[in-house]
Length: 123
Image 1: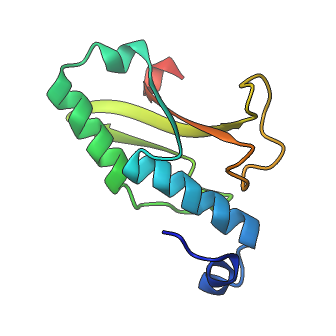
Image 2: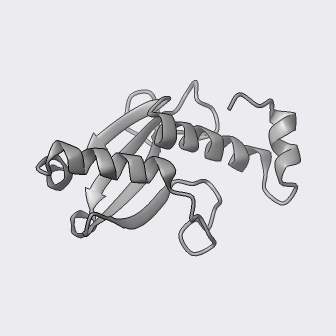
């Protein structure tokens, strides 16, 4: 997933290059656990290891992005059921100090991505 900006733009003329870069970086974190941090809430942490593994695998394999759950096309949030447990995951973009939102989520040099995985009722 190391496309140039030009290759990314050519993937979908109706989506901005910045959005496509954000999507690519989010997918890398979600699928490969690279390029950011992963936080599990208390409700997820108390599940057994096999359940957590199934949840993380389901998040990595998730592909049902649509206008309802992904209105900005960034692949940054979804809810799903895994082994009869309703979960929500979301990716937030922080500056390097983790005190403010990133000024540019498409720039991985100034953005810390955090994937938070939680039970739906923890949101």
